[in-house]
Length: 225
Image 1 (cartoon, rainbow, N blue to C red):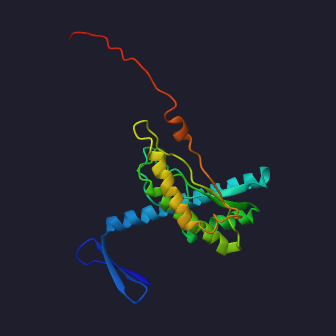
Image 2 (cartoon, one colour; image 1 turned 180 degrees about the horizontal axis):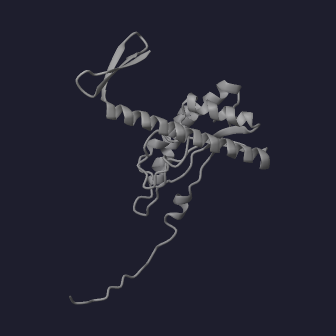
Image 3 (tube, rainbow, N blue to C red; image 1 turned 120 degrees about the horizontal axis):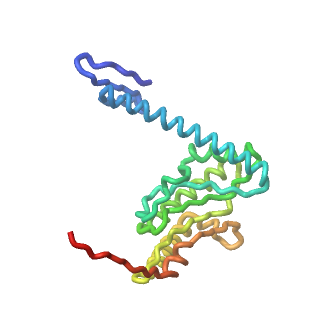
């Protein structure tokens, strides 16, 4: 239960909330801060409803034109990769059950099959621990799907964005080592002989990053002022 009481001599609002365990928490905020919070909450709700509407539309299109397609859920990596070109704000769902379950139910209601998870830590990543965090998050989604409908996912797309420079060619090896360790830690059963897990990647930057050298000339017209 929560209550809101106006301060008597100022614009402060005292917000009391009864939380689990019987502990009472009191937060003090100005009217302006509370108004801003409410407005931002409403905006987030509107954005969510718009995203959900678009999701349903896309599922309808897939059901109409490619009803036998296998789908992947794209998640946002939970760890900042320090990427030169970050993609975490571009697209992707959270990996917690309360965020994944509605997506799985929507796909099921459309008669479509979700067979795995994809993510992308960003292009030219520098913090390779982001791969471990994302693989752990993907495992959580696999587990949620299994609990919901005994649906055993079988595809893990770990994206790309692997750094490669002529001055430090071992960057890819460092990333690969962390990815291998994370897969063994979180998907050890799925990687056993005879398992159906398929791990895929899209290492476009790694293949093309050193494929070309750009040469250009700068011209300057001398003039006196």
